[in-house]
Length: 309
Image (cartoon, rainbow, N blue to C red):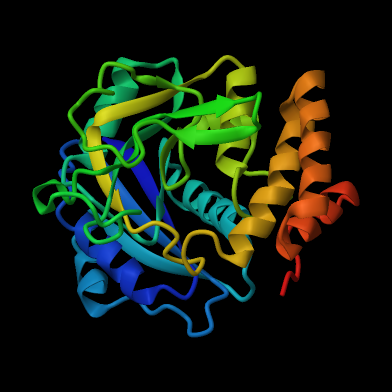
């Protein structure tokens, strides 16, 4: 039996988290033991596990439990806490990170594990991820395609423009990305990680707090010889920015601006770093107040969680 721990960080999204847990009850778990750890990340109202999941835990597969942090540790710290807890308690061979605003296909775990066993060089693997119905960026899709609009079909890093982007985003899934199973980064929205990778590479860099920490982890794993995988047979759905007040908000603007510079100076070439300096000056002169603050904090090494409003 292979043991996998699922880590879900909840931050003031109790309805989404419960919906995510509900989808996990239908997982196919032949030859797999599963523990689900919800990290309540300093939510204003502590997350309480609904009774149905307490009862499900008595059957031992899967088990559900909540670990509480009294402060918001961000995506990095919340997941690090959950990973530490799960590996110490369950001696897990894999951990699977899931955003709280996701739901999963019943074959998600089974297909991810089969993919991992068939491709041992892949240290970190993400499934195919769709927008949840009604959470798409646009409202122009034919209704028959809702639920099959891609959010992630692998990831690429554009070092010239210093952005990491999802393949296939906003496209109807026609299985046109299914033949490309290697990716430049896996997304923390749904990310299966071998325990050996965590032991050799380490956990998330807390300086990021939120955004680009997943890309950073993947680049570090690749530097040690691991490949990053995309498993098209494993599927899930994402509401997108469910715990950060939507796309393009102040929090997102600040952390993405700051962390884009941190990531580049940590991993980029000389040309990439020169480009980062150009982008920083552009943001200082024409960016929003939150983008300018992100540049200032990057320049003064003020990382981790910061007060931005």
